[in-house]
Length: 523
Picture 1 (spheres, helix red, strand yellow):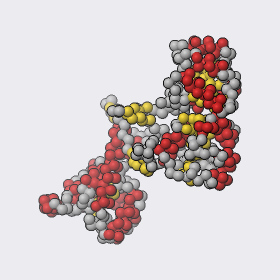
Picture 2 (cartoon, rainbow, N blue to C red):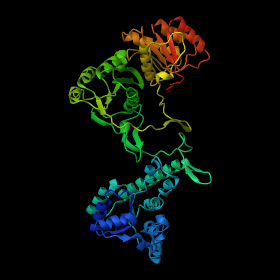
Picture 3 (cartoon, rainbow, N blue to C red):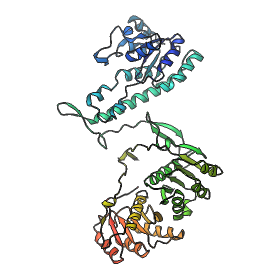
């Protein structure tokens, strides 16, 4: 398909003058509107106003300029259909062979803190999406460019072949329809902020809106999913900058798997929940060790000591740049992946010999907090993330003995780890490190027993530790077991009808127990 006429009307003018100059140098007529036309003329490019094409001026404050039969007729008529050609000639409709359009920045406008309802509405693009849809529908005859990133490839193909292939036009059409679909979804979501109480007013967007429009695009294919017979890929939010693991820089190692990314996400969430140097070791989406210490090396060593057997083949995250001393310890263990904000040169040199270990450097800017989605048969469950941060002032002492300052520090640490352990979750901790973790059991006392066995297997004593539970104790048995194991203090949400029995058991054993009033189930 050869191109004789291009209609260019863009909000984002990045690279458009250079692209239009390329088109003009190939003898393609440029038709344009408003600010785009002015920019192109100022750049020395010959431009025909769309008003000349339509015979109508821009009107209604710019709301109407391309919504005209001579624009959409020129885009939509089918070049190989005799009846369309006859009608186009009858109505003096000139063919538009290439449409170059990008849209008003609706999402950026909506994100402004003090945006008004009027400004929000005026940034709803009408003519742009209409032209994109028209051109994309008629891709067999028309090319459509909705992304400045495609200017170079389109110009190169035109210069090299004199036309745009059907495959190129089809790909550009898919992209344009995806863009208009996202755009309408963004508008539908943000309009839930508008109220009509005699006037149009704007308020805060609900945490859980009536409709959720999420557009995803495939970032990369995985070798397989949880198992080799399952296909999988990483998708990211379309039209948004990459963040989190999608923006991580892989420094070395094999390609990441589906399970790697699931575990890394959990490890990173846990490690970055701490303020001091911290290490988190994850296996099958559960912590098998975590520690917060004065140095990163010490944090890693203590995290590993909690369950060195399970840590074999696990993934590890750090909340600080990995230094040489930490890398020296890391190199002694087989691990699948490591995520950190960065790596010292000496650390990279030490780990270079472990060629299969995947090293990821995480972006400095935190990923945006978004709603959590979980698919079930026939629907999708949506919730806000568990972002609760516990303060010492939130603790309510339930026992006769209050915890000491050292116990409170360790209780707060254990509670933070417990938030990241699958329910029913039990965490024993001492000196800023986990010493026993019980996860994912149907009975809470079973989690206590697993944590005990894990500590024994690792050669760690639970005497002098504290215990955290992600939910209340339905019976006093877990409290009694913790006391017999040597734990001195417990942190739990409270709220059971049998709290009095757990409190009595703690008092009998001389233990301190505090209630948080918050539960941290993780399913």
